[in-house]
Image (cartoon, rainbow, N blue to C red; front, side):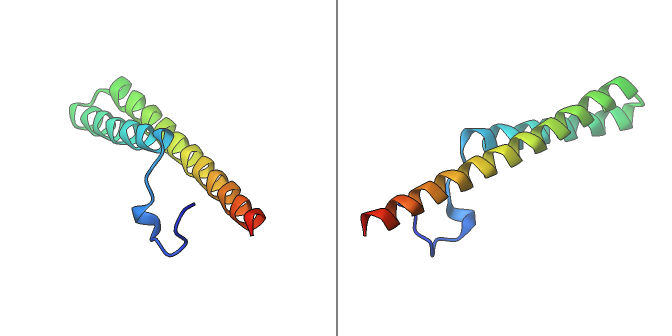
Length: 79
């Protein structure tokens, strides 16, 4: 079971969170490159990837919280 006193920053991220953060950063880089070069297609593609990454990160966080809640319930049932 997880340690409730452990700060959230020390809880390991799941695959969706890691992938989402990476996609978000990749999108931000593409979006900035598109702005700098005046390439609207690249800017738009980057914005889409950034948004997709943010959503995936949030899904991962939600999935982790559900898993933690299930672990907590399991611990309560063992008592």
